[in-house]
Image (tube, rainbow, N blue to C red; front, side, top):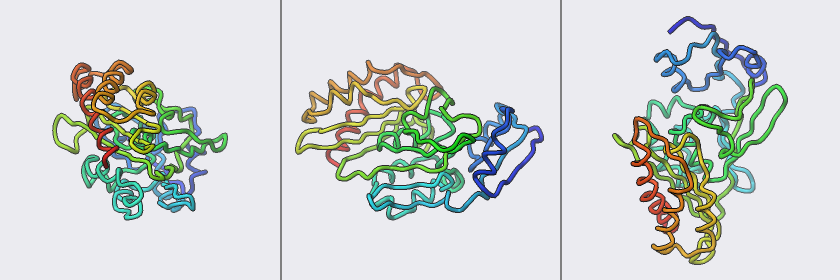
Length: 285
């Protein structure tokens, strides 16, 4: 790696000021798990890194509001999320996602905000949080704004974050009886990068699906809502025939990405099989 400058501001506002530079090689660093790999591989060579390790402690906190919504500070580690009894009680769907998300060493270091801001479609948290209807609070030189997780991504490693903007927190609305499931398929070990990952949130109306949220990633170049498939499922009974037809609709709805984890044709079949399984898991879970 080439030499670079290092800054450690003690507040989020100070970090934003340092990042509001015209230089694209000035970058923030939260946990740095992905950034360090890119630097070691020579993919990215920063002139300055702005560490967020010493900003206000409140940005590392996890709490619940009076309405049951989950608030996650952007600097909370993935291990904090995984080890929170309250999070696992209210959002058990996160347990499976977090325990197969890389390995414990990475989860101890990686931060929630960094996992969302990185823009890699193979990340586990973005499709899961998008399916749950999560919203991020973004702060920058022009103030604060809110962005739904599903709208945070423009393409491969591309986000809507502007120069100097940082994710400060994430809000996950309460399930309030809704059902959720998350699944991913890897071509090697369970904690490897996925060939496809799928998040599902269903509001049931008796034995029928009231409304559905379906999100897919890794098979696509960004986190992607399956809007047409959601409409097809909403109001229907989750019969084998409906789920089969919905899986076929999902395959036609998106463009698939070939990469080292699988061809587009392979990922198409993965979606066809595992979307149905994920919906069934949510219905019966």
